Length: 165
Image 1 (tube, rainbow, N blue to C red):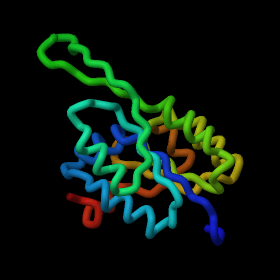
Image 2 (image 1 turned 45 degrees about the horizontal axis):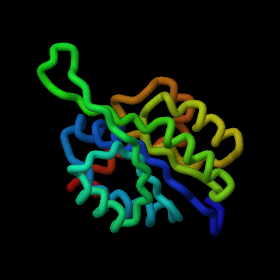
Image 3 (image 1 turned 90 degrees about the vertical axis):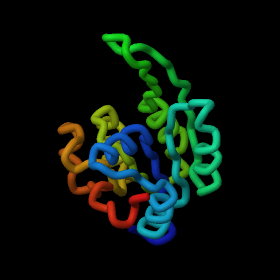
């Protein structure tokens, strides 16, 4: 890592949160923020999240911690057997868009997601020598498309001892 670089982090919060829960624990977002600040000396941490009015207190807390939150409107729908209402707030397009809008403002980026939809973004960051790391939430469950970038990986699930609530 070069001296005085501006490092920005772009987090797919749903992918991160669900993958960590699949590992059997709950992520402490304040501890994650502190970890990123100390380990990588990041300048800005973007958190992309679906907006639900009932979670306003959570969003306020995340902003207080220091996250820059980008909201995606959510949709509610019934699943196939109409037993349970599901909420959809896919943030992929927002994450890519904001990374590109901020492209000239950072030297290197960290993408936190195991979603293969970010392949083209990660590939471009790598080509431009702007990719610092790819935070894979769950070592055992991520897109095979991302394996090409394994030299950049760190696995969030391996940080359980320091990031667990």
